[in-house]
Image (cartoon, rainbow over all chains, first blue to last red):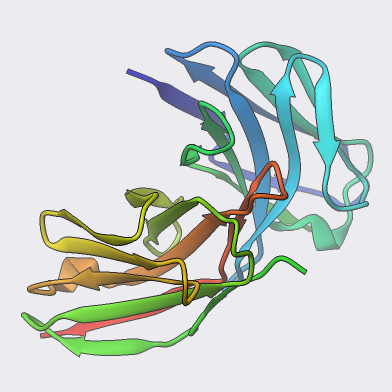
Length: 112
Length: 111
């Protein structure tokens, strides 16, 4: 069966520091991969999605970037974090775009 | 603009009753519809997928899809306190390569 791993579970970072969140999927090949952010009490905001290695689509202009160096690995990065980057970051995967997405456990990011 | 609309709630339902959650969408060509449950502080969990008009039942959950009226609903029978959560409706629009999520309905089951 397929599983998705996302780490760390919580992260506290100072303003201006870099960020790297990693997500890996097991048990499937060539999944669609997604990064979402959810502010407290709010809905899901799609940040990036990828349909293959090296293919990244950005949904919202911001100081975040994403990379997919391997088939089942998706990385969310920032060079300098802003206070507004705080939130609950979720990685998700799907077999293809018509099928449901399955979420990792998320990373709660607090910026101080 | 592609939208998925849900009443934010909270929707309060007595234990044992039927909870009814509704969602409307704006793209007539949409073909994939999903319901997720999200407990506070946790990630969304898929509970139902529906692709054709009519009802689809899975245990205490029934998803209903009406493409002509562009709405999808979720019924929860015999509601339990453990059903208290935010329920997210999600729609795969025909013109987009991603799923659009509604902002969710908060459901509270009172004992």
